[in-house]
Image (tube, rainbow, N blue to C red):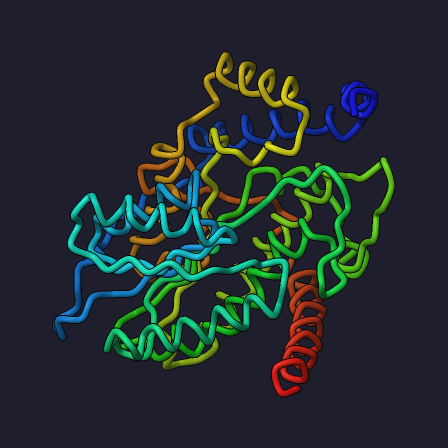
Length: 358
């Protein structure tokens, strides 16, 4: 264990995080100041609709960090919350904490493991049942795909994929597709917010099939590269979903990407403790590290911005958007990723239906 931690100090993946990730966040910060494409959008309140029934928001990864902070802020904007996360005990605990704030909203915890399609499917079914039981309209108004991990080794999911890629991207793609009928059924404009990362800027080429089907076992697991790929895929998906939805004349679902920057969460929990502590120390010295309560601002901005800001990349708080990398705007790669992801989704759906029916 100690040898592995010591060896990590000299690994390219760690230095990639130290150098390229730092350079990427600094570049994004510079865009806020110097880019002519930077724009500030107004916020639109998430107040309850005229029918009297509140708007429903689903937040994944809601048991800590940015997910918990986003849930609290959205509750203050009069959203009723569906908290989604792996740990059912933590979900119940966070739900109780939010209820104790007396924000006049319903808080419902539902277990969800984005690395397992069966879990995603069960979440969809549970959500529909919960809406019916509570007497709500059969729709949701906001989906925040926030859940993400930074794994230090290859772990194969029940569906046969790398766990980090499955959790950070494939699962979000599947969940969004399963919940899209509920979003489209909303009587008011609805929205998908995908929480991506400045680390997508570290990718300069993308082999879609290599990334989605990678099986990198052994000690040389490319944790930094895999995380970057997963966040780039989520961003490409965001833009492609925006384009496809806007081809439907009557569709009122908007899609935003939100980059919270560098936030002090437990995402580095799988790294050796001295590495994560030193990283946080350096980031704090560079004035790049933010608490979740500040980092969440870009997510809330994306959630509350007007519908015409669909397809934008929110970063830096204060309702600002900047340009993402040129690769993330490549429509041909986005179409190829969509096609490959859809094939995976259909295959997982078919297997899940067989399992459920048996």
